[in-house]
Image (cartoon, rainbow, N blue to C red; front, side, top):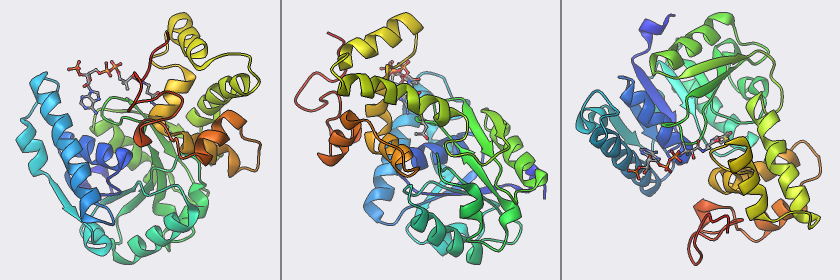
Length: 288
Ligand code: 3HC
C-alpha cells in the first residue's frame, strides 16, 4: 500500500471535526464519503462545508471552485456503505470508547482489506481502539484541530501495533492535503498537543474556581501578553467544555469546579450557546 492507492476517504461523523475533515480532504482532491447516524446531522455538516468552501472561494483561498470541491463529497447514514470502497477511513465519532470500538469493529468488517483506519480521537488510546479490529497494524491516529480548515497541524499517532508503513502513509496523506503532520510515537493520553494545551485551560479554571481571576482577565492576559489567538476560556468555549472535562475525568484526576459546573448545567460553550461567555443573550467574547 502507498499513498497513490488512496483515492476515496470515508469520514465517520459530520459534527464540527467530521465535516471539517471531510472538507479539507475534498479540497485536497480526494473523493469523500461523509457519514453520520442521522440524515439531519449529515445535512447540517454538509451545509457547514458549503458555507465554508464558498467563503474560501470568495477569498481566493482555494484553487478550484466551491462547486468542484462539493462535487467530490457524498453523504450517507449507512456505515457499511460509507466504508465499502474507502482507501482511508477517518473516524470522528463521539469520544466514548464503546462507540469507537463498535464503529471500528463494523468498519473492519466492511472496509477493503488494504484500507487504513484512522481515528481523530483527542485522548483515547489508539491501541485500545485498534484492538476492536483484526488489522491493528493498519490503525493509526490522525488528530486534527478545530477548525480543521484553518489549523495546520495534524498529529499522526502510533498505537502499539501500528506499522511504520501505515504511519508513513497517514503522514504523507496529511502533507498531500497541505497540512503539517507530526509523529506522536507513544500512545500517551492526550498525545502532545492536548497534554500541553488542556492544563493551560485548566490552570485558568482553577484560578477562577479559587476567585483568583476572572474569565475576562485571564483571556486578555494570554491574548495581549502572549499573542495567543484565544485565551483559555474562549478556547474552552470554542472547543466544547465537555471535551476538556472528559479529558481529565477519564484519567481519574480532579476537574476544576469551574469546568465541572458548566458541564453539569449543560453550558458547553459555543455549541450550546453559553459557556464561560454567553453567545445567545450576551455579547459573546468580550474582555471588558
Ligand atoms: N471556513 C471558512 N472561513 C472561516 C471558517 C471556516 N471554517 N472559520 C472562520 N472563517 C472566516 C471567518 O468567517 C472570517 O471571515 P471574514 O473575515 O470574512 O469575516 C475569517 O475566517 C477570519 O475569522 P476570524 O476573525 O474568526 O478568524 P481568526 O483569524 O481570528 O482565526 C481561528 C480563527 C483560526 C479559529 C483562531 O481564532 C484560532 O486559531 N483560534 C485557536 C484555535 C485552536 O487553538 N484550535 C485548537 C483547539 S484544540 C483542539 O482542537 C484539539 C481537540 O482535540 C479538542
